[in-house]
Length: 248
Image 1: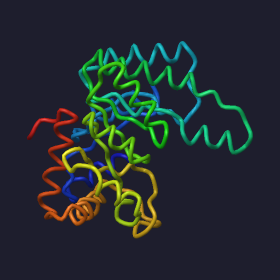
Image 2: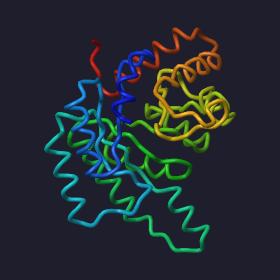
Image 3: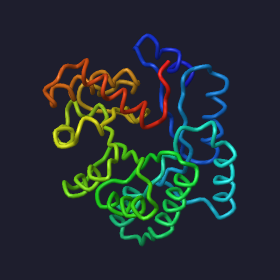
Image 4: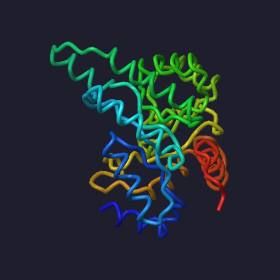
């Protein structure tokens, strides 16, 4: 399935993809895919927070592996805090200790600083404020909050710090996302698909594909009252600049 998707990128005008990891094995698989495919894949290595944390030995192996492969990655990610995991536990009346996740995220923020890499964050609603605290504490300015959901106050704080926010194809049909695009500067926006996440609205039942970003660009352009060409050029340049992707 991955090879099929990568082979289809050219037909949809997709110049490359940023791929984030879930855990150490995911990091390894992504690196292998990049090496053998020949496609422009820009990798982010990390540990997604919406899952149980690894044991101590696994954590050390992950951080050691990332340091060893620093030259083959574009960013640290996807890392952050387990909002949905915590919400599910609390809804079921079960205790949930978030502190180990906060400590894990802080380690990743410090790693981003150490390796001079940008960081891709899964931190929504009130978790975004905790993430901002850690970024500010360790002086990490190159932060990308993916599919952000949160308060206007948090959004203003993120804007003041120059953090990037990406929106998904749900901007086509979801008012909350449209409002975010309206409020946030175009120069700090990016577009993403979060593939393989299944979208609703006009995408119901369709396989998620990077080509859907064209629809997002069209909608962002309409919200910002600019041409689709201008919106696309700015969003592409934002992405290139943030991830250190050189022009071909």
